[in-house]
Each structure stands twice: as structure tokens, then as C-alpha cells.
Image (cartoon, rainbow, N blue to C red; front, top):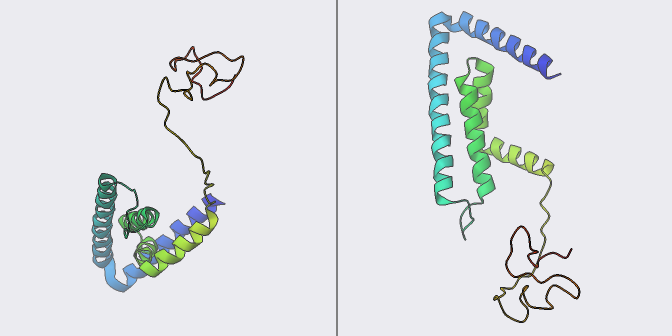
Amino acid sequence: MLRLLLVLWTLAEIAALVAVGQAVGVLGVLALVVLTAALGGLLVRRAGQAALGALRRGVAPRPGAPQPLAGLLAGGFTLLAGLLLVLPGFLGDVAGLLLLLPPLQRLLLRRLSARVPRATVIEAEWREVTPGAPDAPDAPDAAGPGLPRATHPSPRTPSGWTRH
């Protein structure tokens, strides 16, 4: 199915190139292809720099900051739009330009987020244990009756977190 779609897309791109070529001539087509490829290259570069900046700042959400997932997906849309613009062909150029529109990005974001399964949140409590304290894993009865006493976690001794 994917191969058929790829063949149909290629044929449609060729037909679009011929139609535009008849309207504006060969030099016009070449100029448009070079112009859209340059624009796509700039978009890909911008998306890469934005992703690198996000990594440098960290993706931890801060109060009042936009959610990192939305920013990453917007960068992904820009990257995909840039790649579509770099490839020769007018249908890909139109798809790339449409993908730059924020309303279409929001629509795609809603559609994609509806298909992504939600993460399961597991709540737990923890407490810091001081070595040698009565409730520490290396305390005599902390591992449970009849279980070996752990002194330090190593590949040969139990850590105290699991029961064997």
C-alpha cells in the first residue's frame, strides 16, 4: 500500500512540475524549485537550532513556560515542513507550507495526542535511610526474619530493597 502511495505521489509531482512548467517555463520552474529548497534548508536549520537550544535549557517545565511536548512537536512540524520544501516538487512544497500554519499544527497536535496512549502515573512514598539506623536495610531485622543481612549493596549481597 505504501509503495502504491509513493508511486502515485511521484506521478502527481511530475504532473505538477509539467503543468507549472507549461505556465511559467523551464527557468521559472527551476527558480521556484531552488527558492523553495533554500527556504526549506533555512527551516531545517532553524528547527535544529531550536531543538539544540531546548536541550541546552532543559526540558523541565517551569511555571509559566510552555509545555515541552508542544514545543517539541512544533519544532518537529517545522522540521518536516523544511524537509518537504527541500525535496523537489510542488505538491511537497504546498504540503510543507501548509504545515507551517499554526492552526494546522494545532489540529494535527490534537489528532496525534488523541492517538498517543496516556502515561500511567505511579505514586509512591520514599524516605531517606541513614546507614546504621534501626530501620536501615543493614539493620539486623530490616531484611525480615530468616533472610540474610546486607551490609553494602554489591552483586553478591542483597541490597535490602528486594526479598529473595
